[in-house]
Length: 290
Image 1 (cartoon, rainbow, N blue to C red):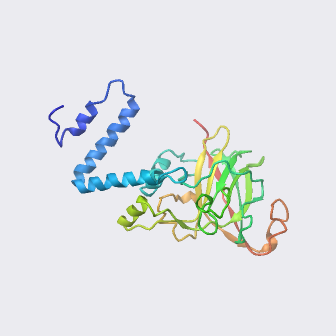
Image 2: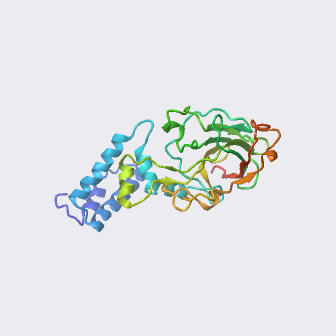
Image 3: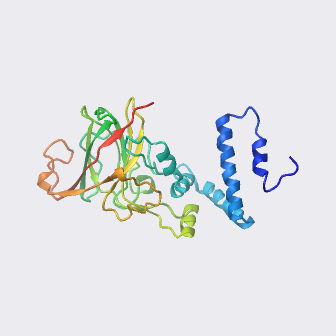
């Protein structure tokens, strides 16, 4: 096509595809370019703005490595990660939420009633719940991959002073689908702002804070895996999560209890809790595979 114009360039782009192109690949690329071209026309994109956008993409690639994926973070703060999660979540199961960039592979086994608090002396948090299907049937031996921030607001992969598997554990539900463990209350934290994502947030006048949360990946035979996170009802950033991860059904409530009410058995910390502790019960619902 020689006579390419502002008005026909999108159609010309689509016309360049080979008849052998995978249909889904063509559908995604054509739609993406149609929206991209429409965006440029709508805002009358300038050369300087176009170059700035390319520069941000280059910086995003430059700062990305095996420990930090700035592209994922960019997707998170733009709401794209959460949008894709929500579009493909089961309406009957517990809502999914963003994985985030700080999950560590091969977490250590965590026994029923085990403790992730270890040497940290912050207030004990007792977490318990049950995993069921959407039909209410309990799911025995479901696998829960659990992780969270340390009390200093850092994940183990961000903090040289923590063991790489600090505040990570792999726990299996019992015959009744129940799980229980102890830890400390996670804290709010900021997403990394020393790269292009920080520049974008600053340009938009947005803060970088996430509400505190516990992460879960739940897997069970015959059920769809669930990646999610749960948030306390009293967190000040609950209604302004910078990565849009909060859902109504993922909000939980911590309650404080006297030390003498801590279970006398069944927990690694049984008989060792001498101060008031926090407790939360949060059940998880999985959808069956198609």
